Length: 197
Image (cartoon, rainbow, N blue to C red; front, side):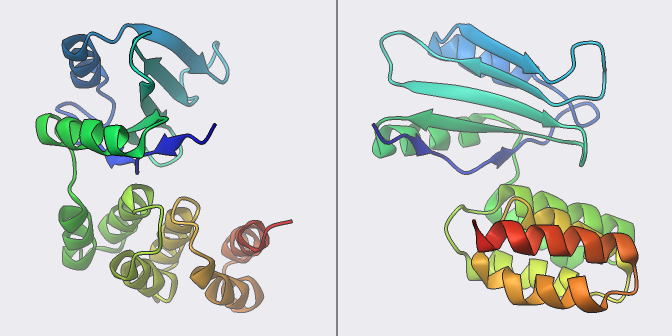
């Protein structure tokens, strides 16, 4: 059975970057009990967290994630009916503190400080549509070509989520020519993963 999955809805928490409470409130309002909690290493604070809610009579689930690498929290919705998933995603987007696609792009374009731009492009990559989107491709591509290594690194992190094959040639160039060894290594590994087996 095929499973439909929404894009990642990037949350704008009220405190810090981690705030599961609004998502728990949404699940409760929908009548979906918490069903699963996954922590990669229970003894470690800094590990990914994944919490899921669903109801027995609704073929959909709500998933909340915390990503400690980039300090973002986001949600996705999965289900067997793409229309139902899209409807639930729209309702979640309307009632949670979330970044719209236009806001994600505007944050990248408006960031002049390299660290702020790196963070904004990472967030845009995480929130990008799963299908190729020229607008997101352009802002991430610009970051990958940026003179500041922090922004290029942000672009590479963005591509880990916006896995558009159109990035592969530029990743190969970074892997071969970037002045920062760590970025060359990251780009090489990512180019291989986009290429597939």
